[in-house]
Amino acid sequence: MAFSRRTLIASAALVPVAALKSSGQPSEHALTPAQLRTLEAFIDRLIPRDENGPGAVDAGAQNYIDRQLAGYLSSEKDTFIAGLEAVDAYARRVHGSPLADLSADKRDEVLTAIDTNRAEGLPTGRAFFNRARRLTLEGMFGDPYYGGNKNFAGWDLIKYPGPRPATGPEHQKMSTPAAPYRRSAFGPDAGHDH
Picture 1 (cartoon, rainbow, N blue to C red):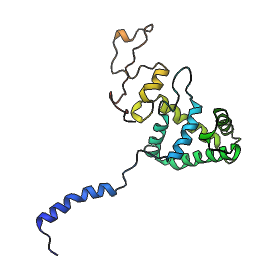
Picture 2: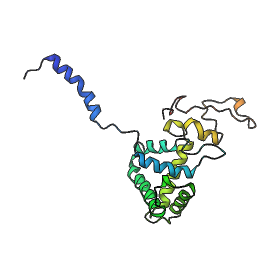
Picture 3: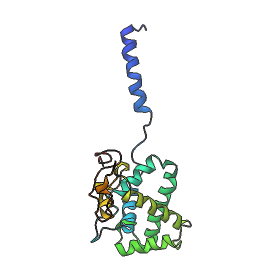
């Protein structure tokens, strides 16, 4: 079968597109909907919504954790998912339901058992608890660019005005609270696609 020059060039132009589609581009998500639901139930008890303001779920800390496990922390993905599944299995054994279906008090019981290494089936429960707590804090109070701190909820809660590109004498007065800058260090719209 003979190929014309035109056919060869046209088919060669399609090779990069086909390569991109089959290259297995990394997903922005590491967790399944069920795993994300367990994570939300977990972090909702670490930093719950209350009279002081939004909680971790409101701030999108679960989005931060999910994105990090799909990217920078991909080496931790399998271990973290195994931890989430062990938490859910423990909740089912002890209370007959997955963590997300339990009342706040029952979820607190589960998390306390995990944090104190008393949860059967989670021999390293405290290590998982501490890692989940650390990632939740990062997602709650970190730069929105990374997927958490939605609408600057964490920064507003602790009255952090945001990164300052430059300050003048009027911003350096100790008795004057800084006005919120409400921008990511990466730009005004960075991280607000979630």
